[in-house]
Amino acid sequence: MMLLNKIHLLKSKFNLLSETFQENSDKILFNLNKNVELERKNNELESRIEHLEELVKIQNFLNESNINQLKTNERERIKIVKDIQIIVATLKDVYSLVQENVFEHDMFDDDFIKKNKKNNTYH
Image 1: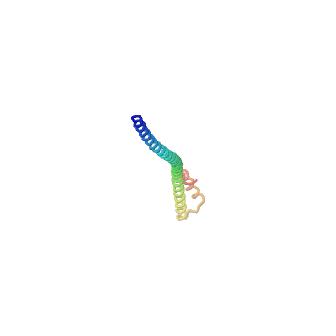
Image 2: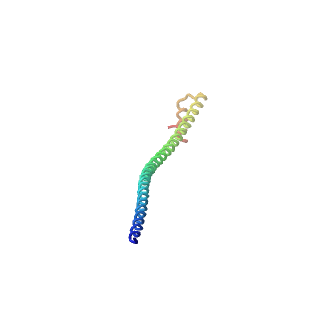
Image 3: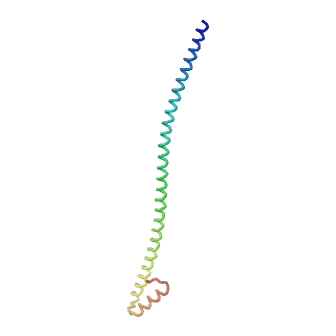
């Protein structure tokens, strides 16, 4: 009888251990599946981050290019403004000469030569 009780007790312990093992196995499997899903999401996010980093690099390059183009355009604008100022000054001089009724060819040429030597207004 004692042996029978021991067998029942062992059987009960075995069943308990078996149930515990099964529960733990289920938990491990669940956690493993969860980890696989998290790893997949992590890889997807890493891929997105790499893509965004590339986009940021491209955007920075484009911004730098645009800034350089703006600087070039500003330099060109300044040159054009100076050229316009030269043209306006030339037109004022011509207008003044016409207003003074200076029609002698030699005087007209002398004024141009003087102006050219003075500050290179005329090209």
